[in-house]
Length: 341
Ligand code: PBG
Image 1 (cartoon, protein in one colour):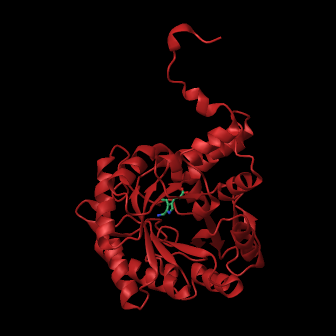
Image 2: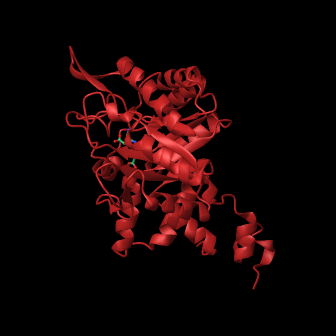
Image 3: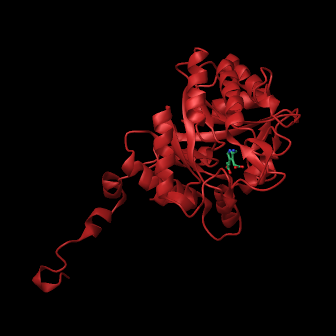
């Protein structure tokens, strides 16, 4: 029975009455083509081994058929972009394995290219923390403030890593160390080496976050002394993210990133609204992934619905692409048509 007087005049519920209408007016849609799947190649394993800290994710030997299988399976689901992380067999002060021609990531890339060609988009994480015996993303030196991470000598090393990853077949290098000027130095190094079409996805606004915990377990990359607060951003700052993003764009970044994603949706929105013309990635990080997995395991939430809701929120906030450990399960749900909205 309608109320008299034509009230309510506006009835937003008309657009929610049944699924086809809801789909018709949906503002945000997830597409596996916008997901980037992190993968871990590890020189200390001779067969795929499940990681402890990131359940459901495996270490792969760099030249294994299973690694190629993973990539082919993902491509079949529509996930065509991968972010490759390496765990070397030896670590040292300078992280020499990160730019060795025969480093774990370099061998993995050559192998993948040899097996599946140019079809997958290969991003390489460009950092030192997984390769150094001190676990920092840059080089520690003694200063009047005690041990500090030296910015400029680290840049020289990043340039070498970039060129060696490009030589091995990377489409995009992804500097994640939060050193000032890293994008400019890497762009120049790539251009000088002839890799003008290798791009840069910069971890522009990367916060010093507790949600990286599981990842550091997987990479064995926790800092052996101190913490990363002198180079990663302070969680209390949002406007500063714009500054970091604008520097990176000016220095030549092709894609910028906000990381983590879930606790920083406001930052994603701020960057998208103010720098709308640059593709924006958001990194749905390891701790965020495990929180949902554990909550689902405990029966607190339905895991499938939670994954889709969270990824939708990140896209709705303004991310053009999402780096996520949920990529394959989300792609499967999307493909099967069981989207829970
Ligand atoms: C390293 C790096 C980190 C992540 C990606 N590259 C974190 C860190 O230890 O600072 C985090 C990814 C994740 O938690 O999923 N510079």
